[in-house]
Structures are given as structure tokens and as C-alpha cells.
Image 1: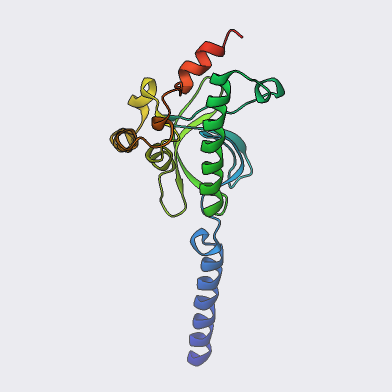
Image 2: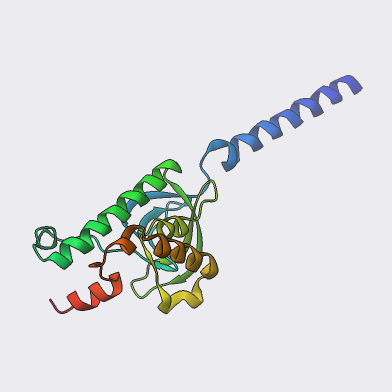
Length: 189
């Protein structure tokens, strides 16, 4: 009887370990939220583990705009073409980062904006801080009006300063207009 009990305990323990490992996100590769779409250089469409879908706006930063309509895509205005060119570069880089993370990101939600998007610091599965990468490469700028809600504000400011000093990305372009200024100037058009 004692031998049977020992075998049963061993079998039960092994079963618990196998089931535990199979359900563990770390081993199954399903950690983080699924990115369904990279909307632009600082916005993602997300589907969480429960199947809820929502949009995430990146905390701390503002990336150049992408064209949202055929009219914008066809615009011949130099300021539009410049903004959209940088916006498409930021979007492409973000798509590349998301893809290298298996289309999954880890969110630290800090707020909800007026459009009901979640505002979050975004990390890849390996811990890479996405906003820092975009800033360091000059594909986004620190968005100072909301910097007080940014848990990593020192880190993002340092990344931006390095890109500015090295004249990377938008910092190399004397004709670049800050995204918030571009939106403001085009609001009435």
C-alpha cells in the first residue's frame, strides 16, 4: 500500500508540474497583450488575454503623424509630406519592434485620454522600453504637457537629449514640425 501511495503522489506531482508549465505564459510564449495593429508611431490596437480590444496611446512621447485619409496621402504641401514621411518611418520602426516581440507587448497603463484610449508605457517581452527606443532613434519627441504622468520621465528625457545631440531622426531635419504643432496648425483645415 505504501508503494502504491508513493507512486500516486509521484504521478500527481508530475501531473501538477506539467499542467503548471503548460499554462505558464513564460514557457508558452503568450506573455503580454496581443498587438492587432500598429496604428501609427505611438498608438497600438490591442487585444488582451480576456479578448478585450482597446487602443493604447504611448505615454511620455508624441510621434510624427501619418496620413489618415486619401487627401492627406496625396497632399503636395511640403510640411505634410515631411510630417508624414517621418510618421511612416516611426510607424515602420514600431511595427518592426512589435514583430520582434512576437506581436506581444507589456503595458504599464498610466491614464485614459479624452478619446478613451489607454495611455501606457509599452515594453517588449524582453523588457525593451519602446518609447525609449523611438526617442533614442529620433522617431518621436518627449510630450512635455503630460510628462508629469510619465513614470519613466527621466529615462525618456535622457533618450531624447542623446538623439538631439547626435542629430538623429527628426533632429536632423531643420524643416520638421513638432507633431503637436502640426496637428494644431491643421486642425482648422
